[in-house]
Length: 459
Image 1 (cartoon, one colour):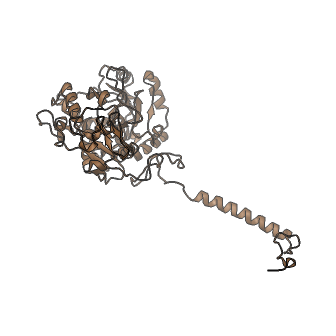
Image 2: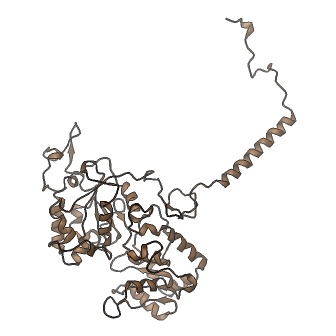
Image 3: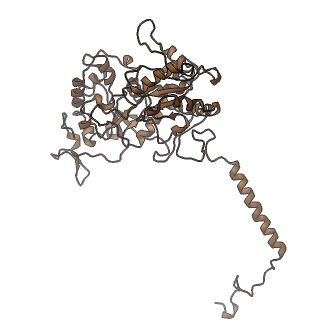
């Protein structure tokens, strides 16, 4: 042990002699701090904080979807996770009695190909894409979600089933699904691709009001002041745009440069007795050099073909999209592929992927109560430079309207998958589901889940 008199000198002791701090040292230290500050600012400005090609002009925003110039999709992580990781079980048409009728009609004569076009084509496309998806599982016990395929809009339009038969068949099908009963339908997905939405199944409010509904329509109330769409569980999907217009580089009609477009705006659609549409048709008669609204004939020698339709649609800077029988309109999505700016004239319309897309950058929404000369004057006041910016922003994200295979880095299905991932639950229960201390799932009669025998009472 050292002697108390031999303690080492303390570093901060006033008796610890070091080199004196001169004025030269102080100036040198100040110069070093100043140089470090400016170099740090220089590097901060030189290094980008997010991808150079972004839907949002504010490149610092982490909450919007980004699509690179090469078409690569980058989805925000907020609430979604860093990557897609989910398993979806797709019911087979021969697996459940009645499911084939919902796909092919009572006689089984309606083909999927016949249902592929038109507004109801998304029912077929989503089904087919899920069958080929890497997220598909053939094991119910490991599935996060369950997809119930049905082409009822097409089947109904082609006389394969009437409303009463559709309702009865849906109930029969659901009563044979133990996993539907286990969760009360919360983990089951249904597609309703038309303006009627889930109202095609008249008893939707009783049986699938907890399920995930994919639909382009959020407003249809079926004259009962009740919407089948729920913002927090359902997903708005893009409409089914003509395949010939969505193929990259080989679209059947190519956009025109702004300087070659004949009209300020156009409306291509029938009146259907709707106030907004009637106003636009009358406005076109008053200002035919600014607004085009030709009479659309769907049959006869003067029938408006698809090619002719898109050739007219591309000939204006703005494509007007009023509501029809319901609030959504396919014209909104079509406008992106002829590169005219969509002007939404449907107050209740909803749009896909609103969590990650800023629609103010790619479209205009105008009050349907103010359709008239004021609208045309407003559109005429917008500089071409701003129109070009909106078209460019729309060009970036229109891949999200295309129902393309999974190998495409940006597609409607990619967006739908991200939205579905937010719906996945760790735990499933309903009013008719119970569990015991050993984690066994049972029904009201204490019958174990593995022994539930269809048909079962629905929750």
